Image (cartoon, rainbow, N blue to C red; front, top):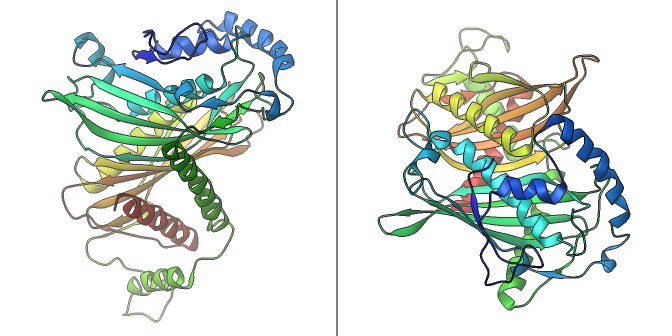
Amino acid sequence: MSHFTCILYSLCPHISVLFLLIFPVRNRLREIVGASTNWKDHQQALAERASLSQYLAQSQDELPAKTMKDSAIEAHLPLGTQPALREKYLNYHNSVRFGRILEDLDSLAVLICYSHTWNKELKRSPLSIVTALVDKIDMRKNIIYPDCDIKFTGHVTWGGKTSIEAKMHMSQYHDGAYTDVLDATFVMVARDPENKRAAFINPLKLESPEEEAIFQQGELNKTRRVELSTASLLKVAPTAEERTLVHNLFLNTLDTRTVSFRSRILSPNSVWMEDAKMKGNIFNRIFGGFLMRKAYELSWANACAFAGCRPTLVAVDDIVFRKPVEIGSLLLLSSQVCYTEGMHIQVRVHTEVLDPLTRQHSTTNVFHFTFRVEKDIPAIVPQSYGESMLYLDGKRHFDETMRSQG
């Protein structure tokens, strides 16, 4: 059960804008889709959901337009007023486990999108709303107090035919006022009841110049993601500047006492990329928020071990959910420090699923985390061409984070 309490503005047709309803977020999500935490009941619910396909729209024109206000949600995490709740969110450093916050953001983003697509004529939603990617999470404050209430607000900011962008803002009550903690942008996609194909969503109706500007930013975000994907190092060669950077890294590690390209030595205060890894694994089917939490916790441990001190999160960037992790599969997580600059550490977490029967590996996610520590850290040095591409990819994500916060 989620420990959110939620103030909901017009999620359901029988709730007026002025009427406030408080309930657990994940419980409400189970009601919307007809899911259950009991395995036997869950299997029955999945079978029943298949019949909801008849209620799917055949085109977006069949669906009524919704406004940004229709999906506006305010959720509270009462860490200050409910001390018993802190146990789930507290770590041994007596601060909030940020991985839990990621889980809550994911659940809230899903609920926001169900709010946008809610059909008052139906008891259950025929849509399966899943997380496609986390576009960006920018930290506005490094400290999250474990004994102060947290507030989340959010709504739909952009919509296509089958995908939705939801933005959320998190603040915390401290010293008599709420202060900004983070801003998050998630992109969700609508699927049919069995999560097999895309499904249409309600178009978004814009009601003011401010909403027009918000929507246009969503369009720019989409364009930027396409451009980044097109320029991916998995598709095209590095730029001339990046090639020069990699070659200089290579030259700086050659042993000048030999005339061999294979004899490599580290410069002072440097670490081979191969020696900056950390691994983990999970068994069973998991949802996106839980996977984000595990990836974050592994990346944090990796950054902590590398720097020799506790890092603080600066940003989460460009998390793409490629495929679900099916029941009975083994999920392998691999964390890699791929770039460092000054006091910053860029960590990449790659997750892949292993089918124990076929022994086939398939990538499910790639996560990018930017951390900061309060001291200068060793430079990370790639040895192979593949590691050099990881290095350049990490630098690209780091530079993008610095520009967005700049």
